[in-house]
Amino acid sequence: MAALGHYNYWIVITVMMIGFYAVIARGNMMKKIMGLNLFQTAVFILFISSGKIIGGATPILEEGVTVYSNPLPHVLILTAIVVGVATTAVALALAMRINEAYGTMEDDLIIDDEARSEGDHHS
Amino acid sequence: MTIVELMPFSVLVPLIAAPVCAMLPGRNLPWALATLAALASAVIAATVLPHVMHETLHYAFGSWEAPIGIEYRVDAANGLVALIISAAAALALLWARTSVNHELRPGSQSVFYGLTLLCLAGLMGIVMTGDAFNVFVFLEISSLSSYALIAHGRDRRALVASFRYLIMGTVGATFYLIGLGFLYIMTGTLNMVDLAQQLPAVADTRVVQMALVFIVVGTGLKAAMLPLHLWLPNAYTYAPNFASVFIAATGTKVALYVMIRMIFTVFGYQYSFSAIPLGAVLIALAVAGMFVASWIAMFQVNQKRMLAWSSIAQVAYMILGLGLGTVAGLTATFIHLFNHALMKAALFMALGTIFYRIGSVRIEAFRGLGRQMPWTLTAFALAGLSIIGVPTTAGFISKWYLILAAMETGDWLLVALIVITSLMAVVYIWRVVEAAWFHERPQGAKTVSEAPLTLLVPLWLMVGLNFWFGLDTRLPVAASGAAAKSLFGVFAGVAP
Image 1: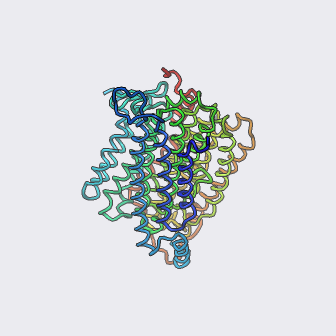
Image 2: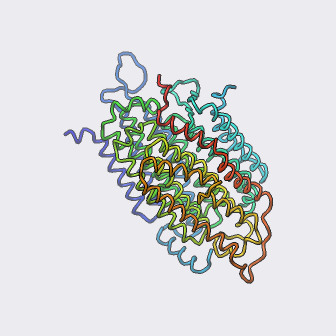
Image 3: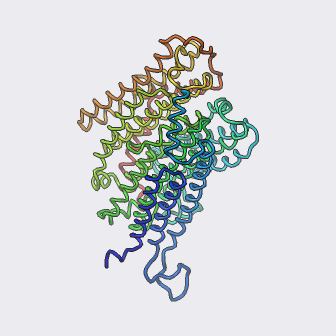
């Protein structure tokens, strides 16, 4: 049962690896962005779940309560989420521009396209 | 205003100027504001540096003392890096106007300069802060703006290069964040000094070891440590020329600084080098980087790509100094950090100046160019001497201290490897010199005139600095020595 006691970590590892796999193994840029999001979200869960204290109350001062959960990871991850949103926005904007320039978001097709135009004119 | 109160302004000035710059109309106003803001940041950094040579200054934001609040904590190490970054940015911006006018649409220039300032603010923030999470936030500010800077390149391949950099850069930053998460779970703090005090109690756990591994890999990715360098060549090649100058002179160095800061200040060098085989791994990767990257650089047709590969090799020298794990090694790392900013900025500026006239950076387009653009190509050759490490140049000082540090450990093989890879630099610089001076201008190639003074003056200023700091080594050597000593002392004398 000890292994299941930290089930949050198992969730984190699973989600993280799914995301990381998508980033590495998928050639489609949209799928890469989705994978990156999953990967980041897993880290957010790692932080936030570490703030939970068993038996701890919501961190608002109240009489008769002595054990509170730790609110700091939530605040940190709020910042990290904003960073993640910004990253996704920039990535989507780039993917859109790439789609306009190449007519595709597939890595393989872009590499082929480059190889062909490299042969045409030495730029 | 005391010096401590002045310190945060080297981050705040570019940060506040950035959105203003992005909203200014025209082309000259945004450029002028960006240059002034970077200069102001550099002046502040230069004012602060003498005060931090022997002591550590810290500024608590909103008077919330650490570890509750976020503080800026500056010692000789980040004082020096802050000066390198801001001064390189200011000099690059001086050069920028003509090149940016040539390469970017007028409408996108104010945003471009705004992004440059934002990137500078992020880099300065990473360097100044004493809070490990704050480093992550600034890391992403600088990274996101550099992705956008690179994507401004005229070639559509700039977009793909920027996208790949974004994917790898975000993975690197997230690795750093995972490492921080582990540290926070174990200690409940994110302030660097506080972490350093709390970690020894829990140091002997797998979690803390893994935290160190994640942080070294994450920052190594950002610093383009072989084999995590794949994003760099295309990003530098297809970025607008100004962005190449700016990012090559600043980006990887800041990532390396974070690695050094975490290894030495947060984990402590004794722990870092004994808990995992850090020294051996770093030296092995550095040697591989020096060789592989220099080798690939020798065969590049596109000369911006040649300089990009050369950058990977030069970062490897810095990692080698770090991997030695001695005061002399770390001193050499900081000296090379300083000098490499000078020489790479000069070389990329020279290439950008050539591109301004002939519209190409391919080696065959350089044939016979030496007689038509003598000042530009002489500048390139002189900056090239610096990267090779010829005496009287800044590059020689770097190599000298690195070789001394390697000799101190008694590893003569490393000394030989440093010399051999320096000779490889002779090859890739010589190819340009040979094309420019020892070949006739091909039939039908258009005759070009020398570049305008707005490009040449900052370029020669940068080349001049390469020789200035090759002859007068007091500033980089004294500051690097103080930086290395303060890192080995782990903020000695300020522990409460």
